[in-house]
Figure 1: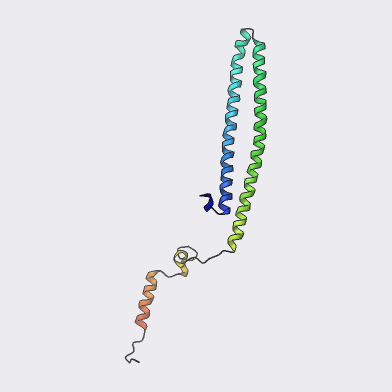
Figure 2: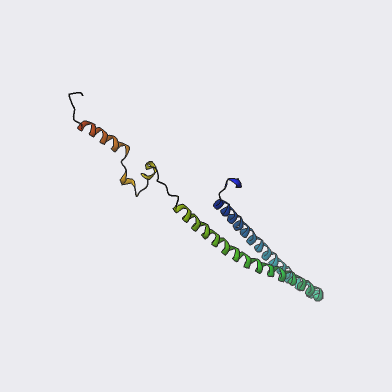
Amino acid sequence: MASKMNTSQKVSTCLDYIDRRLETTSEQTIQIAEMIINDIKELTAAYPEALKNNRLREHAERVRTTQMKWVNQLHDIILEQTNRDLNGQVIQALQNFINTMNKKQLKHLDFDMPSAVKREQPEHEHEYLTQEQIEALMASDIKQLPVSSTHH
């Protein structure tokens, strides 16, 4: 299928692919945020139990380990978001480029629309006669033709 595409279609296909990838990345970011929230909830719920059982040191170590894990994840998310913003800008720039390129190319490739198609366009409908109008004119022209009794 890709071999049958023209250059513009190939570029558009690539842009669509990037766009889908960005959406997927966004979903992954949300999943990571949800896992962070779940860890925080678990650590918060475990604190009273650790306090009661005199295991605050163990709990504090667990909190610190979890915090470091998520600090690294959040750092990656921030970098990813920055890249996504840049990717979005690149996509917009490429789409504008393609649209401009297509407009310039198509300017030189004009063609006349067939009258059957053109007649249906609101701005041209008054320029063309309907089939009934043509037949009525033809019939009236035939009636108005002088009838000659002599043959050459």
